[in-house]
Length: 117
Length: 111
Image (cartoon, rainbow over all chains, first blue to last red; front, side, top):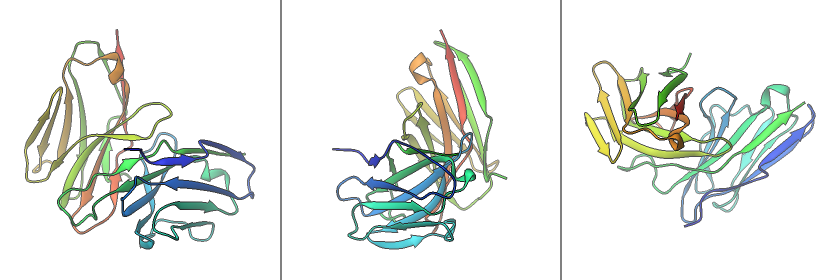
């Protein structure tokens, strides 16, 4: 089966500009996650969708970050305006089962590396 | 600080065993995971263990869980150069959607 797809793979922007990332999860996976991975750190969850509804966005900086999953499949993550500290790899992941099931395996995409100058 | 802690670096010789350690703080963790990340790639799930288990073995990988000490380890037998990567420990909590990651351990395998 095809894996989680993300684009672009790399993006360089200046601070105060806007940027958007796209994610296509594995077919049939109801749950989609966006993570931010700053260099030298582990991934940090930004937002989680179950189908097209938001389950958890408690760590999403909502003054500048937004995300949507309108049809319950693809998702976009937007940053507007970007700051220097937003430089990171943005990882998308998907899982088949909701966390209250017995198994909870997330499949990760290759990520988008964002550099803000 | 991190809820999940790992040492940052580990270097071993090819053919030796590698042991990567992790400590976590939340006793309500349900699943604990080990992910591998190679340069420029996403995270690949290596193995996971349910919190009521003490050990899980999968080919060259052995996971040990000490719930009393909140300590998780990953042993890689016969380590190969292709095992060089960053290894992340992660936990999910009961009734919580959040997966918490450690900062990762960079494993370097020398020929």
